Image (cartoon, rainbow, N blue to C red; front, top):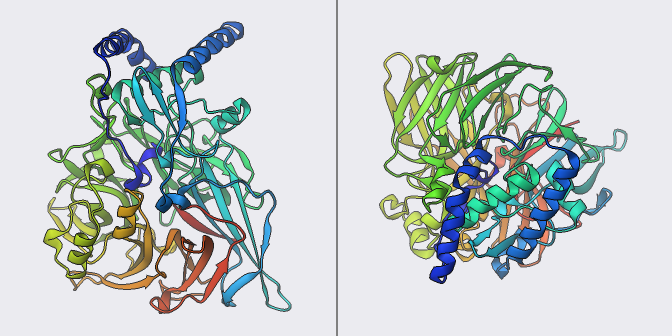
Length: 579
């Protein structure tokens, strides 16, 4: 689901509001009456019915929503100003302000980042007799921000253009046509309100939540796709940023699609998975290298809907993460949250052959924790090595807090024992396929860091370097759990060393980044021959830029800082698509 894409922003707490007993009784009666109906709704799509009846029913339900629910704007704190949406600029704009120099051997192409950009001026909450529910930041409609790099062959000079555009999902077009919010918030809030939102959204629109397409962008077989894992991908014209339509692999995939598909080393096939809060909870697929057919699809027979955000690959295997952060619609009937972390629940990592089935998965029990993002996976003799970003406890903000100075002091003093349990380390597991033994360790201890990227040529293969965004705990605390990243980290992995060596590239105070990615040199010979590029925003000057950092001189000043013609809100994952 899309709401697992940005861990610090997910707010899945619920509160039982103080309301008169008669209203409580009414809510309880309605919830009880709708209980069997909603269970059927969760399990089955809306059936085909005559158009006239459907339109009449829709109008009646719409009138009920307008009467019973009040949409209200969610205010932003001053510290949250760059989480606010922006308007589309229309046509691509020439960028003229560049500090430093774009390297001569930088590849031509487009640096593109996805992110949340809510319609109608910002996120909304609803109030009703059922309580309050709210959209969270990760539920904003997807907007692509792109910086195009073109080099004139004769003079050798660079020209850069910037553009942005919403991803036109089916539900985006639906709400634009309505000219007002339609979907009731169905993730955060009071359980009765969320449950009723699920039911009413399903009855009115045939789906429980909007299609967001706001998390990532990826390439397969020279086509480009925007994605959030609550729906299938949308194909994008990378030059114009126009949305071309949904990609369902010629009808072979009809469920959510991971935001982090992986190309299998050697074959070029695309390994995907999709989670859903009803059975089958977890399905895995393998798409042909030409993107035209599904060559393998399997239900892994999970007994819960684990909020699994990413899948891993090695040369022979798929790597599956099953951790106790789960989605369970039935919890809403008990007044419990839709998304919940069970600190006493089991955590396991599965390794399966590329075209295996549920019985072929070899499971390894690991310490209970939260993991959303993988750094990389690879084979090392009898072991499968998995590196990931791990928090010891829940990464949901209502179940933790950014307390600021005490934790920052502890981090600076390398006193890990007093760092909060949600602090995100890079962790390494070594899974012995022959003996079943598990070795696990932290590869970092100094700073909390997330959103890892590597040189994509090494996905599924042994690699030596990883690049991550460094959490600014103090700034994140002031922003009430909306994470801000004040720098970049380069990790050097060595087998004979317990901890990875870390280099840092920190931004000026008040400047934060998102969407960092690695751009390899076209003629590079070493794994770290290239640059890390990232969107940044200076909150003091309200200026957005793109930094180009030399990966071989990581701690030094950026080789180029490109000032953009408009503000770019913080977002999620970025990628570089060479021409």
